[in-house]
Length: 308
Image 1 (cartoon, rainbow, N blue to C red):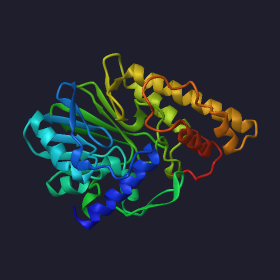
Image 2: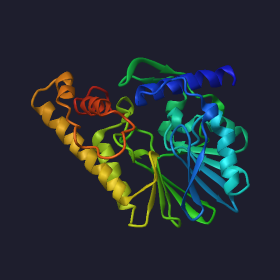
Image 3: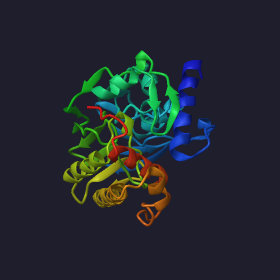
């Protein structure tokens, strides 16, 4: 691994440490890519970062997100096992390193990278994460990793017999998220607009808002029927019922924190009240309830200027 890649992984591991509370020394050489059939010619790959969507067919292979450079060979092998052929397109749900850090290697191999225009802007500058750690800094992406096609509101790609509709949902998880809909396959890839394993990370300092996340859930629900399969940014494959439960979690969490703010409580007092207690049922959350409370509090009290 070259120095640039090593530095980027150090930053990505630090991000994982901050968000997930796991060891920053994760050995990616031991990560295996799991393939989950979704519908028709669409599958989900699960590794060490955000879930990857895959479309295979006569036109070639398309990926939605690509995790880390250390896993690109394994990702390519998993895609080739579904159907041999070149990876022609890489679509980024957002610019965070656990979703887009494989861009450079795949672009060098011939893939066209597409993302929201704000994601490209963020990729070109130093990354910070003040809502998590004021000292956190991450180098810009190298030029070869940048999207060569950007989306403002919507774009449709006709590929492998399907219509892949790209939809920008503003000020939800961040200011640069895209939602992807496979019309024929009846599949959605939401990126971090939806977590199927508990409380989500909201990048408040980069335009993310709790109300935007709730609106995003409504957008997703409006594109779903009872047969729709939903690939989340993190967590197991889900469906309309899973998104509906996620929306309920967001609404309840927002309302509880909002009520405490209206009562004049400080952040420390809000955290001590444990407003998320009892909301999450089942598996352990990807993000701690305390961190989710902090993010919602910072959003509702206007700590960070909203980005467009």
